[in-house]
Length: 294
Image 1 (tube, rainbow, N blue to C red):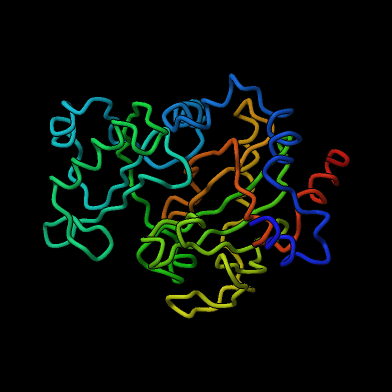
Image 2 (image 1 turned 90 degrees about the vertical axis):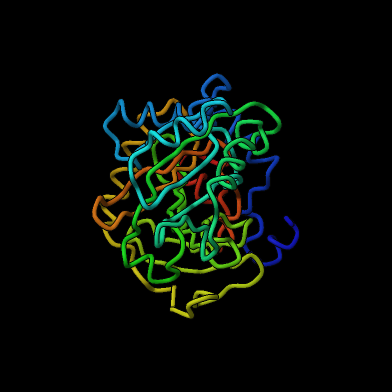
C-alpha cells in the first residue's frame, strides 16, 4: 500500500508519512493516552461538543443493552431519516443510514425490516464493530446535505476531514460517498477522497483509491475546481473544535447541512493517511511548516 502510494506521489515521495511514523512522531507525542476516549467513544465526543456549544447532529437515543432495544426504539421521535452507529466503531464500520419511504425503512434503495435493524443494533452492542468489546449504539439525526455537495451523489452523506496539529489546520479533504460505499463517505469502503485548498475551500484532486479522476464515478459530475460553500464557517468550527479537545493531533469530520450549516460529525485520534493521496502531497512538508521536521 505504502509503496504504491509513494510511486503515485513521485517525485515528492520523501514527504509521505507512513503509519509507523505517524504513530511515533505525530500521535504519541501529541496525544496523551488518557485522552483517546474523547475521540474513540462518540458519546464522550458529543458531551464535549455540547458542553462547548459546538454544532453537531442531534442524538435521539443511546442503547447499551439488547433488552432495551425495542423499548428505546419505540420511544424515539417520529422521524423519517436516521443514523445508527456504534459509539466505539472505527472507519465507518457498523454505521447504517436508513430512510423511511412510503411507511417502510430503506437502506439505500433496498427495504429493510425493523427485525433486521434490531439485529444490527444487537450486533453493535455485542462488539462486532469495536474489536469484540461490548459497545453502545447511537441513534442520531441524519442530516440533509447542502445541495452543493449532495449534487455529486444523492444517496449519501459527504463529509469534510480536516487534520489539525496544535490547533492549526494541516490538511483537508472532502470525502464523497458512492454506490460502492453504500452512501458512506469512508475511502476504504469505496468513497472518493478530494483534496482541498485550505485557504479557499477549492477542490483540487479527486482520488478513487486507484486512480485520480475529475468526475464522480456514479453521477459523472465534475468534482475538481468546485468551491465548498460556507468555507469560512467550516474553518472557524474546526478551530473551535481543536481548541475544545485535549488532543493536539486529530482529524475533525464535519458535515455541511442544508439548513444548519457546518456540524461536527466526529473526531479521530488516528486520522488515516489517504488524505495525502487526495492532496498529492505528504504530511511531512505540511507539518514541517508548523513545528519543524518530523
